[in-house]
Amino acid sequence: MGTLSSVFAPPALRPARPISAAGAKQRMLKLLVCSGEHEQALRLDGFRSIAGVDEVGRGALFGPVVAAAVILPPQLDPLANAGLKDSKQLTAPQREALNRLIRSTALAISIAEIDAATIDRVNIYQATRLAMLAAVRALPIAPDHLLIDAMCLDLSTLPHPCAQTRLLYGDALSLSIAAASIVAKVHRDRLMRQYDAEHPGYGLAAHKGYATAQHRRALNLLGPTPLHRLSFAPVRACTSPLFPHTPSS
Image 1 (cartoon, rainbow, N blue to C red):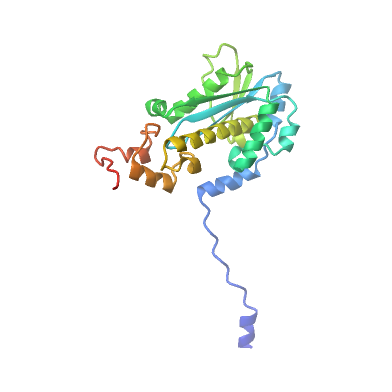
Image 2 (cartoon, rainbow, N blue to C red; image 1 turned 90 degrees about the horizontal axis):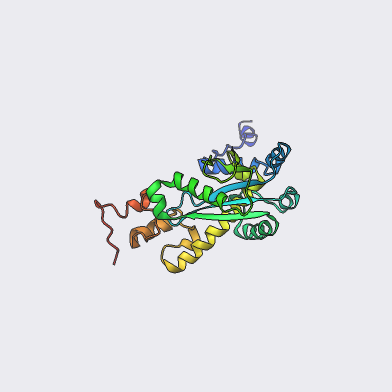
């Protein structure tokens, strides 16, 4: 009988793999539904020109932070049915296809960039706000309400009255913000491919200026370019007077 007990013994449980904070966040974001619910509620309140606003490149070590503002038409079903959602949950070909659809559908689109030198001077948070505000100002149609991903802007300098709503995880909840995230992402990715040709060796076309292992190795080997953000720690470490950069032979 002793031998039979081993036959019916329950299988050993495999230890669960730990989930990183980033992985847990991505799982959570996939559960959110990107829709026109917020836009519809604002239209019922009397708003007509609703702009979604988002940024990309905030955490990068290289290049500008880019913001986009997009005013979509009231009928959002075609974009929703096409799979419009947070740009981070899409592949590059999906973003490119949706970018074309957004540009052919939107009532107004604008893009603004804030360069690395300004980021170093005012800090990335303020530079992001500047980029978003510049994108709103550049819209050819004056918005009367902004849907903004996780930030509030100082709208007192706008030449027209405009309300705003700050939405946490807005690019995963609002079709207008998702459209802005895709327009900004596609624009910045194209910039990074151009910069890759101008600054070879850093792999900018692959990692888009973010702090990957490849990018950090290139920084240690080649040092920063004029377009790197010197106020960011991984870049600053390569330019510290205590550890002056000496390119490898």
